[in-house]
Structures are given as C-alpha cells and as structure tokens.
Length: 342
Image (tube, rainbow, N blue to C red; front, side, top):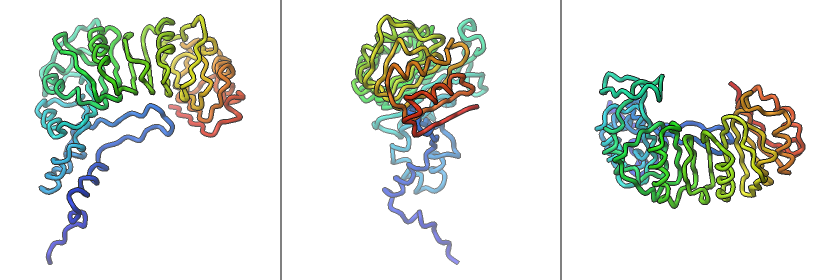
C-alpha cells in the first residue's frame, strides 16, 4: 500500500511559511498588563524554527527562506558564536528583536572570565560577551525590539544609531556607568523609540517621544522625578519603581496623558502627582520598606479625581487594599479586578 502524505505537505510554500510563524515559542502575557514581555527564543532543536528544519527537506527549505522565523533571538544561553551568526544571517536585513544578556555561571563548553567579586560577590564567572560583539554590533542597529540585561559594553565599542528601534528594555548595575553613557548617546539617534524600560543609573533619554515608560533608577531623587514628569508629556503607560519613599516634589505634577499607572515600592503620591485620566492602576508591590500608610493610595486617587476601571494587585498581603477597593474612584467604576499572589 502506498504511503499517503500528510495533507499539510500539499499546501503551497507561502501558506506553510505563514503557518510556521505560529509555531514559534510564545509566552502568554498577564491579562491586562500594559507592559507585555516579548518572547526571545533560545535556540533549541526541540522548538521552532530549528525543529522545523528537522522534519523534512522541504520544511527546512521553507523555514530557512523565511527571515521572519529568525528575527527574534535570546543570546543568554548560546555558547557557540557560530550558531548565533548563522541564526542572524537567516534573518537577513529585516528588523530584529534581540535579548542580549550575560550568561552567568561557569560553563564547561566555554572559557571562563573572572570578574571583580566586589562588584558582583555572588556571580564570579561570566561568559565573555566580547566574543559575541563582532557578530551582534553589525545587527544591533536593525533592532525594532532590544532587551539588554547586565551587559558589559567595552570602551572601544563605537556608538550606533537606533533608526528603527521602537522598544528598549535595559537592566544594568547602577555602577555600570560606561554602558549607561553608551546607551544614552545611542538613544539620541532613536526617532521611533516609544517604549522604554530602564533599571540602572540615571540616564539621559528622549522622554518627550515616549508612550510607555518604566523607570527604576537608584537613587530616584526628586530632581530626576520632576525632570521626567515635566518632559514625558506623551506617556500613556507609566511605571515607576521606588526603593523607599517617593521623592517629595515642591509642586504637584499633573499628567493628563497617563491612563495606566503601575507603581512598585512606594505609594505616597498625593502631593507629587495627579493623574485625572487614570483608568488602569497596577499595584505591583507595596511592602513594609515603602513606608506606606493605608490611606496613601486612596488619597492619591481622591486628589486625581479619576475613575479606575481596571485594578491589578500583584503582591498580597497589601494592607491598603480594602481602602483602595472601597474608595469612590474605584468602587463606582471598577470593571476588572486582577489579583496575582504568590
């Protein structure tokens, strides 16, 4: 009896190529999160697109000819620079989504480089990012989405222009000033940047063009907060992370554009910021180190005279939760309540 081919093999190459895009790894975002985490695939022979190349010669040819399948990549666990080079070559000249992260921990497959234990006492070894730089630098200006985690950028690295960059997420040590200066200079040539997450030392950023801003700066002083609030006048989704209390401002800042506000660490907002058009409030964490009073958030909502339709609480117990839920700005308008508790 002749072996029958699976129906999918009879489809046109263009149709198969479109289907292959839906086989790429993905992660479901939180239901109402305004700061979705993009998926950066780690090369894995049991997942697409590499898995597609093992099914048949035709599937391999179709997958290899579609740069859209190779436009996203996480470098964190790649110990073979040749694999990274081949992957990025498959992407061609289209816009990229890259996560550039330093792989921590000793690896028997890669030479070890010792770093100063006084800076990172618990992380003594890193994979040498300098081996990846010759491969990554020619491609980094193609990035539409870029995520950099704890990256060391040597002094010799030339500045780049992010002409197509739309979303940037950076997490670095607050002592990593060379990386902060390099990125600050590069962002002067990022006309399309609208989504920005920063965790690290203070940095100069084109705040005025941003629609999504997530900021975690240590120390987060009043001058920086005032500068951000005065300049980032187009921000619709705002996330602020405070180590302790929110810096007190001499005059209250009114932000008309903000509709979604996410706060981490502190809640003394009533005398610092007013958000009259706020509809989506996210309380990520309001632990004891925030020195928060139970009435702080209700007072902020009352001053803002907003109408909350979506409330998210990501960490319980949160002592002020009943007061927030019963406040007039929440109880009369709330449609969606999301509670995420570990």
